[in-house]
Image 1: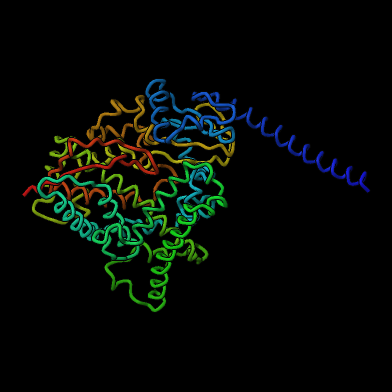
Image 2: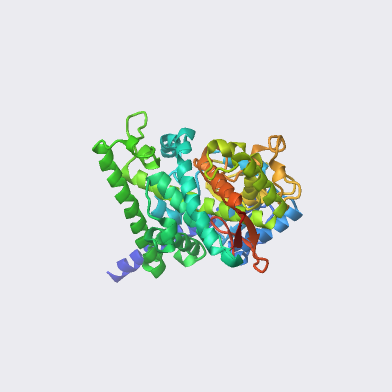
Length: 503
């Protein structure tokens, strides 16, 4: 009996060793193939086990060093690096390479490096889904961003601006400097909640004490922290940690917040409460009433996911653009004067601004584009290739992770003259029209471009024009402002500003 048992044990061990050996051989072949492919792109020398993981430190510092070496010095169109020995990455830095991926339907990366950590929060929404589901839901959501719908939001933009301007005025009394990012973020969130859900919760007045504001802010912090902690990459392990427990608890809260509003609106529609009695049809109304060619609408979970995504994506990015716009106006006095002169010429003594007004503000539009080029709100996006794709003469295999370095592309010296000089005039007249359209992609481009870009730009223009019409913007000369790459471009230590009433 013992001999039989021994034979079984030896057999099992043999099978396990054979399986492990096969897997090791497969991995080595795969690694050799990836190494050969990555050799076509320059990059830092990897360690045999850690790859370039130990060189990364903060992702901002790593990307900054790589940009100086491979974009500014070598002027390459992409570089490569390894996260340990298991994750090869191609980082694209030039419109010629970036547009190949943007033009494709390659899905957002959902692996350990990518968007997977946000999915428990935002669900399988338009931001991360792909294939037939993405195509269907994109069609269903597009009417929510039609100009006829967006035009109805200008009153909300202006009401939000009224509150924000008073906060800036009160905070700047006696020449005091105040930090602008948080106030900008609250204003944008207030606008989003009103435009998308017709929700008025005095967000700007209540501030960070509002539980939804606190939850969204904390969720962003937790996702960023998890990205930098390899130990928490496995979800089961993350769920056991204090951070993981907090994250999923907050997910439950924001989901319930949205679901309560959605359910109340569904009851209103079922009871035929007229939408016309409200100021206008909002984002949620359109989500609830949208039907595809088969007469089927979005599920409750899909609606909640799109609402949560709209809150996250529209909140952080627009707050980034608004705060950097304030900074640029304060830093470049001659540009501030030029923007103010145009705004005053267009609106005269009017206080509120409408769609016709901003369409006449040509220099403001150039200024805003230069803000988004110089301080790219979404510095990079990650895509996973669904099929082999030729990039810069190299065939990249299915499944490889590509990072589209939008911020790097916006500062490539072969594309932009004096890329680190802030110059709105570079977007005037025919100058931009003569450029490759993929040279400037703050809202991405191609089939997966940002569906809410018109909404965001209208909101930004109204807020900027209202601010500059009332205030002269002054920067704190003793405060150093450092751009820092996270999900969005933020100022590492904030932006300190004083707002001086012009009257």
